[in-house]
Length: 461
Ligand code: GLU
Image (cartoon, rainbow, N blue to C red; front, side, top):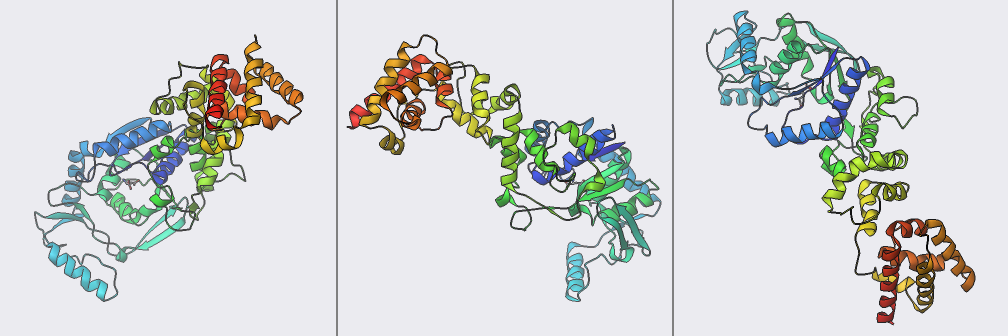
């Protein structure tokens, strides 16, 4: 069994494309079949190498590895030509020399009469030998197929055009190449967005004309933005790699994608192996799915919380590098990740939270300093320096004890010590449990930062 993903490299891989790829990939994995990647780059003006790279990078980031391919349509022009010639030779196709002007006039006339624009077949019986090649679509009868998602679809052939299968420069068009490839590559399941559903009857007629057996079709409902309009850049229909840049884990992203139009009861969290086990094309919703960024963030947070620090480190490496954090200049990265896992919604938040462990800072957040650095906190900070300096075993437990003792000694609550201490350690107040943070920051750095806080208070009073 084989399924395929067949993107046109005319832009980045976006969310909708990634969901199509995931569904096709899951279906192949579930059947222990092959997943084929085919780059549909016949439109040489709009296809770019950058887009090809972006699509392949995104597939790699998501670990949607292909078992076959990537195949490139641009390398298969001879084969398409052969099929076009075959269709001409069996009179299932014909040359057409109608000018653009004539076609436009015909179009305008049909539209003004309230009819569907369609070629009128003027060249169908002329036996020409140059021009564009049109497929001779059957004139009567219906094309009927059972879409796995949409159900039975029936289209009257009268509604279908004699579509162009080769341009006058003999380059083939999409509907021809997709049929030839899905046949030659022995694709059993064509899983794609429902923006292609109007092409399917035309393609089925081509299969029949060529006497080829049909694959099964599953057209995926579109994805809407949270306001109910078609998903656009405004809603997050940006490159998949943007989600990497924004700190999403690929597993969380895939988990989010699988729920866009497919469900298994009310289960929200699926490991990849569970997705493979449970996924069914018949479980795909007929209605459009809605994109909801809050849910994606929620899932990401869940995945960060439950993934091992080692697994997170693999994906964090890109962000660490991107933000030039020198993790040699501080505590064990795994311990830092452990300390931040429970409080990071994204890897961007995590990497921001990491900075205080590896980079020294020279200033304190002014607003927070105005609130937490004052004559009272000066006494507290002095005590912290004195007592922490005496600790021979620098551990979170001992640091915690020290803070507690100061609270008792001064008869104040934990927050009164914790807040200036947290600000002194972080510069911006953004730090988790201060005893753990201080342990990881290390004794020297902690005391230096407390001294810096003292200087700040002295200078501003
Ligand atoms: N190349 C087409 C696209 O990117 C998809 C073709 C197909 O899946 O049949 O929209």
